[in-house]
Image (cartoon, rainbow, N blue to C red; front, side, top):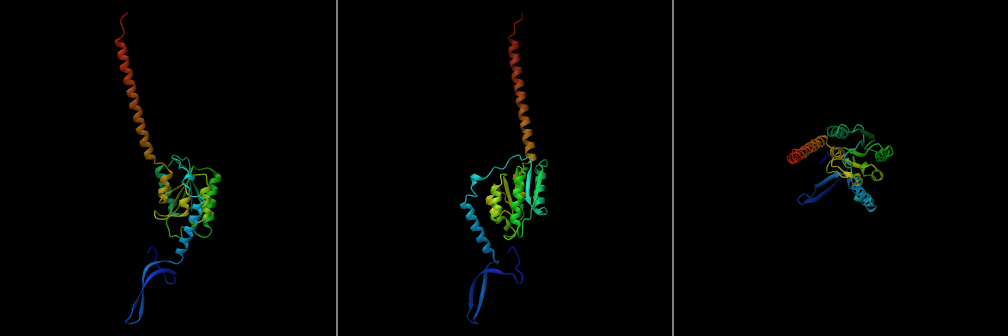
Length: 237
């Protein structure tokens, strides 16, 4: 279990019932245990997913390409989220010259979904970033539920700025992941998708510089050979 049941917790269990005939005792052997209500949440998740899919909200043809060299990156998340520190650290390591703007919003709790959607809309209206990262660390299905709300999915799809969903762990899937232009398995992976690696670009520049130098040397050598050939054809007047 990824949680420890406490006294008074409501749970749902799948059990095998056995009877000890000698004493007339019944015994329940638990095969599966979960918090009560997770089945209801999963059913709501599948229902909304099917509805939005029928509206072509997840159509791959609607998804925008993530820019290879963004001039500014926006992050929609809670300002005190642990995942934000990981994202900022990764962006700093990969491309420290790219400015980052944070659009703060609660990412959990009552009313968080509407506030997340409003933060995405704010980023859209301000039009100051080339790509957005929707960021939230891992958690239970209840913790991540704000990202399974219809209002968030529609805000993502209506946003003209390419958006990467970096919500939860690799095994977590939310409606926001399907609506986003690209899903990242973790917030850190989302940062890696948003920013190019400075070291890779510097290596590419060095390789191109060396190629230009080789081409220049070859051109000069060819010109020198041609000059020698013409010099031998000169006749003394």
